[in-house]
Length: 345
Ligand SMILES: NC(=O)c1ccc[n+]([C@@H]2O[C@H](COP(=O)([O-])OP(=O)(O)OC[C@H]3O[C@@H](n4cnc5c(N)ncnc54)[C@H](OP(=O)(O)O)[C@@H]3O)[C@@H](O)[C@H]2O)c1
Image (cartoon, rainbow, N blue to C red; front, side, top):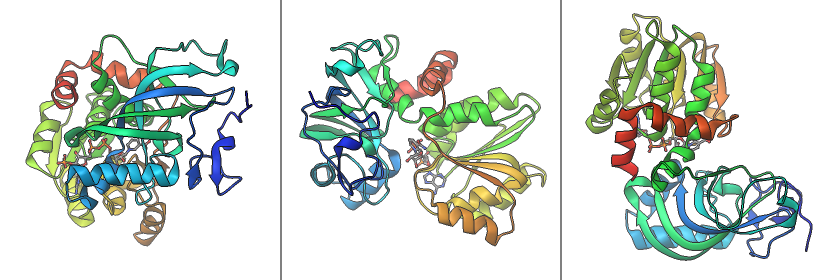
């Protein structure tokens, strides 16, 4: 059996020398190397920024969405959206485990798992698109995928529905990072508060900021505003467009009595929201860009342009124990469990 690199560089076709995530094209043949796991894929959870872009390009037409998705995988050997640069993750069953994995991991063939590395670096073959769930960015397929030796994954818990676990695990980094970043007494602004990652962040922000802190949600529509409010974790939910930087700044100024946010967390799925996050934050504060629609250039030059000295964190999708922390929110918070079950089960 062929021996593979732990990071999967042996699968890179173009350009040679890159790692699988930044590479344009991967080898998606399904004969495994000694340190890979072959997965029979059941569901793809397409990253929200990516699915929103594909849906818009397809004008909402499911046949066109399917054609765009299969086109991406045919061209790149992975579901790496060339417009947004983002991926998503998947659920499937381990079919074959390479000999180099044995003894290092408790994973067994036949177990159902969710990959916690992005689809943007996962060799994937789609044989058939069975069903597209537009409302939850999930797509049932027949196909196979490869997990590298360095690839993290979670065996799916027994006590939670599969689609719910997939939804939570897709954004697992957000809440776990929030838990690390928010201190007691902080004023926290969460933009996109009624979405999947936003709701999980609300829980951790409230828990960490405590009664002396302030949690401010921002949502663009009544539905998502009501959803964020119904959690009970926000002091206030503002209805505002994240692309309207001055509007957001003024609303946050009013809500914080002029102090502005100590920590701002951006969980939206649309572009051009960097400056609203920066202007909502006090000088010396911190902005965590979880959104994959964030532009590094727009954030860096935008902050400089308005003379804001804020620390900006790129939304690393991984932080230690993120899967366990995020799945546990579904057990700790009955109100979020109910919302997630209604939306994703
Ligand atoms: N860093 C990582 O590793 C990682 C991993 C996964 C996902 N992501 C990214 O994280 C972001 C959020 O993902 P998600 O799954 O939580 O998405 P989601 O459930 O679709 O939530 C996005 C939220 O943004 C809100 N929104 C849309 N346009 C807005 C606007 N103009 N102003 C204010 N809010 C607006 C939406 O409100 P409505 O519901 O009213 O439309 C929605 O509640 C995406 O960009 C996704 O790509 C990052």
